[in-house]
Image (tube, rainbow, N blue to C red; front, top):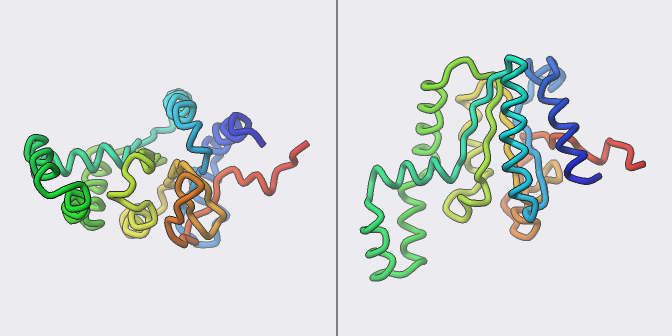
Length: 195
């Protein structure tokens, strides 16, 4: 099934009451992954904007969280861009990556996302995107594991540039991210007729 067809099905699914109320999950957390070919990133970004607009017209509020933007926000509060450049020039890219990972510990990211949730009340769905842009500083399975305690019954849709088998995450379809079995694949083409 083409991505465009899956995106049409996604638009429909996000408006269903069972999805919004997290029904039929057998007490599992309402974490969903919409995987897509990384080369379709620009199409996906444009479509997300349209989906959010369409949902809002139907009185469904979405909190969109760009993981990369969250990372930049945290880093900019701690260190200036000039210092980052100077650090990389003197210590190298590998050391800079280590430093960034220290600044973006899972607990810090979780707290920042919690703050965004507290500032934006009334949303019924959370979209998490920017996963590919944030790699390798932040790993998506780590974020998902840390968000479980704070989301409750709010559906979280992670837009993932790669493949999700239902058990394994493979960023860009090449980099094994980790086993993550707590999420469901949203618009699972295995269950849809290909004809």
